[in-house]
Image 1 (cartoon, rainbow, N blue to C red):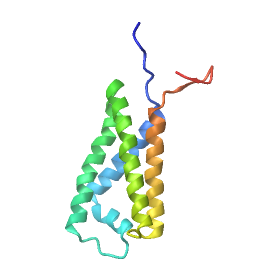
Image 2: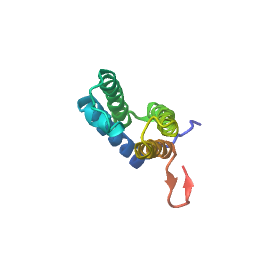
Image 3: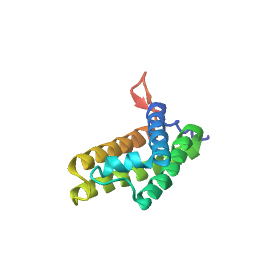
Image 4: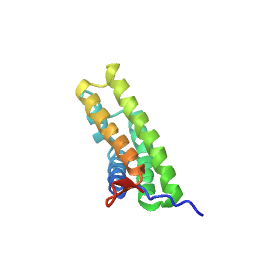
Length: 137
């Protein structure tokens, strides 16, 4: 008998995909906007920062599109990777705040956004519940 795997939850997956595509496109097309949000006291002229936001912007757009287009085992792997990616982002944001390398307000906001993405990734990877029995399928 073949083992039937439940499909990941759609709503958190689509929400995470939308966040990734939006943030990635912003990093790719308008890195200065994001640089200003992270470091409001400096002019966003650092070529290294622009490069980094564009580099991660395209990665983030592609990861978002993966969540919209992949199915089955490939999608489950993407969601597993998403938990690791967003947990690393959350940890980095928190450590930058704790070390004083980001202003407190920016660090809190960035950490909360990354933690929300982590929670969406975890939730998206859970099998849906069976509403008639209250159990996961």
